[in-house]
Amino acid sequence: MERFSKAAFDRANDAGRATLSAELCEALTERLKGTPDFHQGVNQLVTELRDIGHDLWSFDESDEMEVWCPNYQTPNGPGIVVTFTTEGVEVDYPKQAPSSNE
Amino acid sequence: MGSNQPLGGSRIWARLLVALIAFGAICNIAQAGTLAKPFVAKNSPLGFGRNSVAICVGVEAIQALRTHQENAGFLGELASDDAYATRGIATPSLEAEVDAAFGSGQLRSGTMVQFSDSGGALAGSGPKQGTGAIWYHDNIKITGAGPGGATVELRTHAPNPGAPPGSYSQSNYTTQINTSNGRYLLPEGTWKTIPSMTDAERAAAHYPAGN
Image (cartoon, rainbow over all chains, first blue to last red; front, side, top):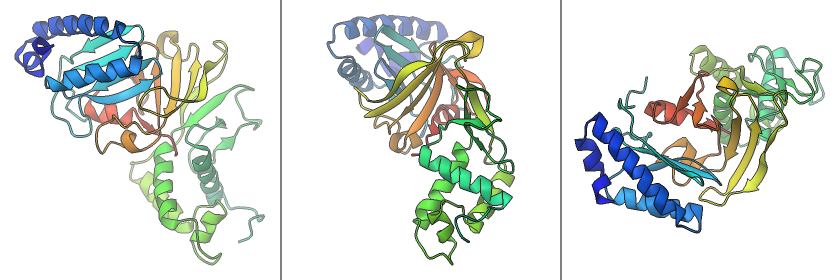
């Protein structure tokens, strides 16, 4: 997981971030498949992503879905948005920092 | 003022808004208008149909009303302003506050989203206990109601302990309206994915649910 650190995303250009996002998506999907409980599995993965520097907070949750994104209440800059579903995982990194509030 | 006396026009909307607080921001309302034109309850002949539902954007106003009413405590003698609240009627001072808030442009009223079963039978879980960090969910799915005919999920849930510290969603019930392909309805009526939202839009996508 270390190669998917926040620092790695920060260093990369748009193309590099797209690659990192795709590879992280694949890794997370694989990890989540092996967990017996969806929410516990997501919780573990989010903990690991936070440990490597990602600013992740819950945006939304249902029984089949969890979305995590950077802190929108006290913004710290752009970062990955991770959508976990029982079907798979999506990782997005905004091309433009969504820091503008208007 | 006796509770059975006819209410003045300005109080009718206030009373209805207070009623909305009790039932939550997601209400079975057949038509929502401006505050000067009171909300019309379901079963009204003005309704859009047997299974039509509209949701008002009075949620922001409701939040202001709630704060006021919490401060008022729904207590007091009939001679006091707060006596209105015990009867489910907004106080004159509350009306003035709401008028000022709407005048400032900080609050809006009207129909936020309106849907029916015309695109297919409504589905969803209804009220239920969550399996994750959020203990309570209430979901409905509306076929064909989203952009491009997408299915819309209208979901209200309990406070989200994983939301950012200090965010409204962390400590309050909120409603989210999204398509099955991840687009969320924002207050101004646009549908956006989370990555494409600003921070303010991410917060705004969590509508106060009138808890």
